[in-house]
Amino acid sequence: MNEIIKKISEIGIVPVIKIDDVSKSVDLAKALCEGGLPCAEITFRTEAAAEAIKIFKTNFPEMIVGAGTVLTTEQVDIAVKLGAEFIVSPGLNPDIVKYCVDNNVTIIPGCSNASDIEQAIKYGLDVVKFFPAEISGGIKMIKALSAPYGNIRFMPSGGINENNINDYLKNEAIFACGGTWMIPQKAIDDNDFDTIKKLTEIAVYKMLDFKLAHIGINFDNQFSAKEAANVFDKLFGFEANENTGSIFSHTYMELLKTPYLGTKGHIAISTNSVSRAKVYLEKKGVEFLEETKSFDEKGNLRLVYMKEEIGGFAIHLVQNK
Ligand code: 3PG
Image (cartoon, rainbow, N blue to C red; front, side, top):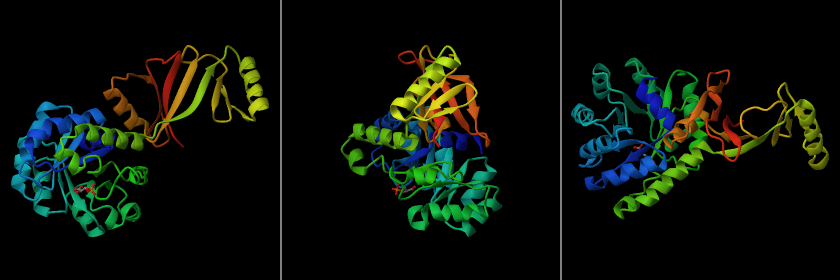
C-alpha cells in the first residue's frame, strides 16, 4: 500500500464529485473538509474537472485529491499537473494503467470481475476500484474475489450509502468506499453547502459508529474495587468479571484496582475503526497519548487514550467487538 492509498484508507470514504460550475469548488471542498472527509475524486464527467482539481488542492493542501472517470492518458497528464495525487478509472484500460505505472502515478482502475483483477495484477497493482459495486454483486462478490486474490485491496463505489457502507468496510479486503451520497446534485445546484457538510458528517459518524463502551472508575486498592463490584452485582445484577488490573461489572463499568489515567477514571468510546477515528479526531485538534496505543494480533490499532481529560475522566477509544 503506497502513501496515498494509506491516507485514503485512513479517511475511509472518498466523495466522488461531478462539478459543472467551477466557482463552487472552494465551498464544496470546505464543506467536505469541515464534515470530516478531506478527500475527493473529481470526475472528468464535466468540463470543470481539471480546474476544480487545481482549486481543491491549492486552497486545501491537506486534502487528498484525485481525478476520476479518467479515460485517456492526456487526462492523466492534465490531472497530475494540476495536483491530482491519484487517478481512478471506471474500467481497466491497459493503456492508462501502464502509463500511470510507468510514470509512478497512483492508479485505481475499475474492476468488477476476476479477469479485470488479473489484468491489474499483471501491471503490478494491488488496489482496484470495485465498480459498479452494488450491481456487480456487492460485498458478496468482493468476498468471493478475495479468495483467489488475497492480496488485492478494493475501493467499492456505485450504490454505496450510509446504510450499507459498514457492510463493506468491515471486510479487511476493502481499504475505502467511494460514493456521491453526501453530495446530492440538488445541494450543489442550490449552493446548499451546509447540507453537504451535514451529510458528510453523518457519513463519517456512521462509518466510525462511536458508542459508549464502558466507564472506568479509579479505586485506591483492590478491596474497594471488589466491594463496588459486589454492590453493582447485588443491586443491578451486573456480574463481576475480574482480570489482573481491574474488575468489569458486566461490560458497563471497569473498576480499576489501582488508579490509572484520569483523575476520577476513564470513559471508553468504542468505534468501528480506532485508526480512522484517531485520524478524524486529530483533524479536529484532539491529541493522543501515543504511548498508550495497543494493537490486536493482526497489528491493527485497538486502543488509544486522548491526552485531555473531560470532567476528570480520561477518554480512550477502543475497537468495538
Ligand atoms: C463512481 O464513479 O464511483 C460512481 O459514480 C459513484 O456512484 P454512486 O453515485 O452510486 O455513489
